[in-house]
Amino acid sequence: MAGGNPLSEQQSAHKPVILVVAGVIEKAGKYLLTQRFDHASQGGLWEFPGGKVEPGETPEQALERELKEELAITTDTGVWLADSVFDYGDKVIHLKGYLSHWRAGELELHSHQDAVWIDHAEMATYQLCPADYPIVDALGGTSSYIQVPGKAGPRS
Image 1 (cartoon, rainbow, N blue to C red):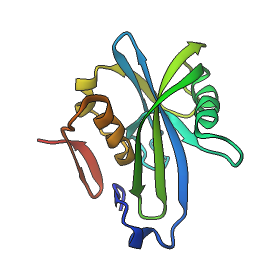
Image 2: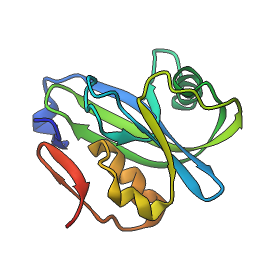
Image 3: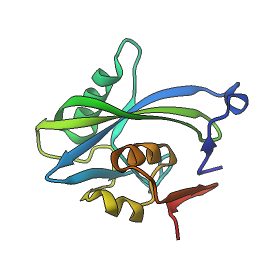
């Protein structure tokens, strides 16, 4: 199932749980979304950039490392926004979302095919990775999204 489902303990009993972090980078009232490569897991979907927490790292350290590797920018990790635990079928993702403050560097896409700066209201027009929706909700109250197996996107 490409879209996945919110986690139930029964579903995740025999699947790896992967801790990942995502950075919500705000600049002049716009938020950065990055688009996953088409050939990748969740290919073509948009996300807040980030990645896996490696052994020995705190989530904040992992986020700063990942943003440097993926986007060539230096950031400071701010406040925690939301956690999301999502079953993608073959694995369970535990995503921790944080505000991230861009300190230095020019944006370079090393792990994504595209990037956009958008208003919060515009997020409803992008198909996000399902685990990212609780972060969107934390940024702006209620969500205008539905999650359907195989597809995530705005409500019609």
